[in-house]
Image (cartoon, rainbow, N blue to C red):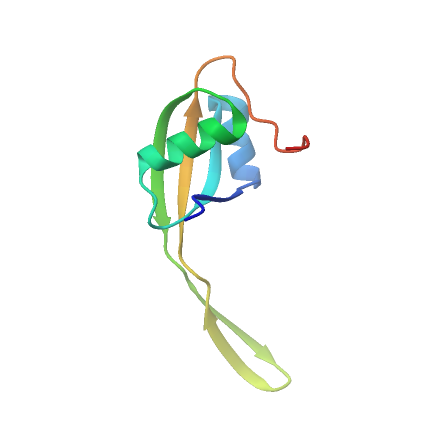
Length: 96
């Protein structure tokens, strides 16, 4: 099971990073907080203070196309918000 899927790089997540030193990741829905903590510490070499998890439910999407009315659903996923200890950062844009 690959625990970390990808970092979430949205405007809301970057505000959390700047103000509170928190980073957001999409993670496997079966992963628990301890597994997420060890995976991030090994991958990025940082010390983690806290891990909060959220299950984001999918929402219904509808659109009208040339072929007719199309309705679908976005998938649900698990999000982890990780608080790092003071003075530590994660650089997503460097070569890993």
